[in-house]
Amino acid sequence: MSLERRGDHLVVERVSVRYGGVLALDAVSLDVPSATVVGLIGPNGAGKTTLINAVTGVVRPVSGAITLGAVRLNRLPQYRVARAGVARTYQNIRLFAALTVAENVRAGAYARPGVLTDNALRALLDRAMVHDHDLQRRAGTLPYGEQRRLEIARALASDPHILLLDEPAAGMNPRETGELRALIRAVAESGTGILLVEHDMSLVTAVCDHVLVLNFGEAIAQGSPAQVARDPAVIEAYLGTAAESSSA
Amino acid sequence: MIEFLSQHSKLIDQVGINALLALSLSISLRAGSLALAQAAFMGIAAYVSSVGAVRLGWNLMAAALLGALAAALVAAVLALPIGKLRGVFLAIATIGFGEIARIVEINWPITGGAEGFSGIPNDASTIWIYATLTVVGVALYLFGRSKLGLAVSATREDENAARGVGIDVAAVRMGTLIAGAIVAGLAGALYAHSNFFITPGDFGFGRMEQILVMCVIGGVTSSAGAILGALLMTVLPELVRFLHDYREVSSGAILLGIILFAPSGIAGLWQRRT
Image (cartoon, rainbow over all chains, first blue to last red; front, side):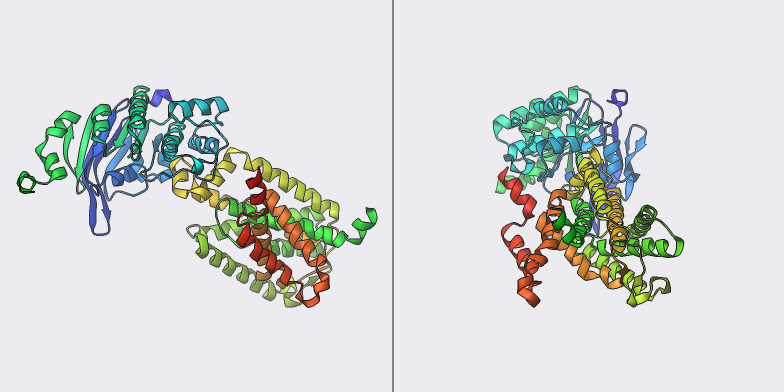
């Protein structure tokens, strides 16, 4: 474990990402301190997943800097970013579907020295609230909600400094979302900084310390969940202008 | 029993060598790379080990190891240009490389050209072949259960997610190509040293196709499957000799049957039942 490095902040400074002629992210800045949950919200196509992809090295920013403590992430290949302590889940589940539950979690711990014991593995499954403990079951055969939680277990297996969750509540029922809320808070309280992309506003309000709102690649508001919810620019981005709303 | 073994010793040796070749391809397939250069690696090692034995007096052990080393070096160089290729593009590029290797073997004076290279000491006994197969089989089994083995499987399942957990996918692909070349190289050296005579045609596309069929029949990522596939595809043509000129049809028919009814091969049938 690398507890001594807990306390490393993820700092995103004026990062821009361009896809051909489209500016997908326009000078976005963001700070994810340790033991903190930062929400990232915005309409579809606002650039939320692009920001996660920039942080994890999947896409390369055209300008700006991304650092974790003293490590400059935005020059590193994707696998080195993961080894630096950044773990993620995916909007569309990307488990190693033909591998077993145990192999998926062990792969998550790949960057750590040694191999996870069965006990450590079960503890991770418990923590991520994966209910089916059949370690030899193929991950692709689990029910949808279990796959989402297994993906979180895989991400937690690396004992990350920073955890990026891309719409973890998508397709979950209210009971599962409640469990997820408890899980996110527990992980943050253990010292990990979390960046949460999510459409479920009740979940965002319940777990986030700070929220950043993106629209068309630009940060249009930030603050506490309550502040952001009152912000006129945010209301406009989600609902259209007041005039449009009243005429509809 | 002894009578059977001595009557069929040539066939038994072929089964062992083909099993090594199928295993060598299964290493790349485990990482999800359809890299079809196994016959070329086999040929490179066959020529290096034969020329070394005849001209320089290498013994079998030295010839096999240096042949495999030569194949590994060529694989390391080949890995650079083909590193970013996937799927069908990788398959075509590696088949192209195999053709280059074959043409070089035909034209380089030291290989004896299209007429072949003869006078190779016939010292690769059945014991040598099966000892090598055992070592390679055990090594692959242990590798499959190791952390690196998991990195290879994860790379096959989802390259992006593999990078996301810290796996250096490019290194995994290069490593499996080189490991496969070493095993194919050992098979090539043993092949040369169990025949008096080799020609470039022994290591052409026909050979590569045969290796691929053995792997597909066995189940592409399974070591046990690769060995079973090699056994079946080597022995079967002998069992259907009564078909005379049509006996080659049997392997095509089996391949078609496997693809249609058991796409994950013999190993897949076994797994489905357990």
